[in-house]
Length: 304
Ligand SMILES: Nc1ncnc2c1ncn2[C@@H]1O[C@H](COP(=O)(O)OP(=O)(O)OP(=O)(O)O)[C@@H](O)[C@H]1O
Ligand SMILES: [Mg+2]
Image (cartoon, rainbow, N blue to C red; front, side, top):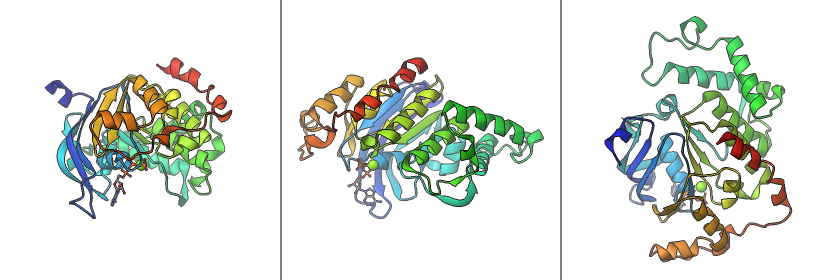
């Protein structure tokens, strides 16, 4: 790795060690090294409990996790010193697996506040007043147009914007809202934690279509998933296997196919790890429901 990576749009993770804040001596991540370049899609796969969600949360600054070692650079800045909102203003985005409901707050107001905050930038440019359209904020008209454009892109009904954030949303609608936020905020580094969506074909399809519609040469993606299936619809440039707090193997998309065929067992044993993971973990049913998924494969090609 060259030092040039420290200043451009690479996410550089070096020797990252993370423990739960409640148990600082119980490290979950034990030295993660990973660089996600501009425009690259990296998939992180790993057995249950291997630390995938911990990695996503630590990168975004979740208070329940304590970084006990290593560094994370993004745009040349040490982001571990920044609050989650500053990381977001710097162009990072985390799509939650289980988004929270906020009754009383409309989707439109929520996303507009987030967008305005993001526009002010990490260093809070005082010449920019996000609430004032003539001082760099988004005018209501521009915002409506942007929302309309992105909702069209994600094939969403316009009435969605006036509903309360996640209140009474179905699982699929929650996923759609995560994708809409991502589309409007236009992050440059998106982290998606899709741990449990492997068994939910609807959520899987929404995420795949959303991500594929947004892929562009400026967006780096860290796609966290237990199941290979999502990777049938979003083609990763690199696949990394996380186990026992470390990345034990990296490769191209073939690695994900191998995991699907063999489960995690053989790869973990090759890495010299004692394992009792069930190889069965990846054996998702290959029934007719998978046929549904052939449809989103097309935007993958279109977007790349
Ligand atoms: N806040 C916490 N306090 C204590 N232990 C935690 C905490 N968060 C995670 N852990 C433990 O750390 C390990 C890794 O958890 P993590 O949620 O990161 O795994 P994962 O790879 O996302 O798993 P899954 O595939 O089931 O989503 C687990 O053993 C978990 O119980
Ligand atoms: Mg998880």
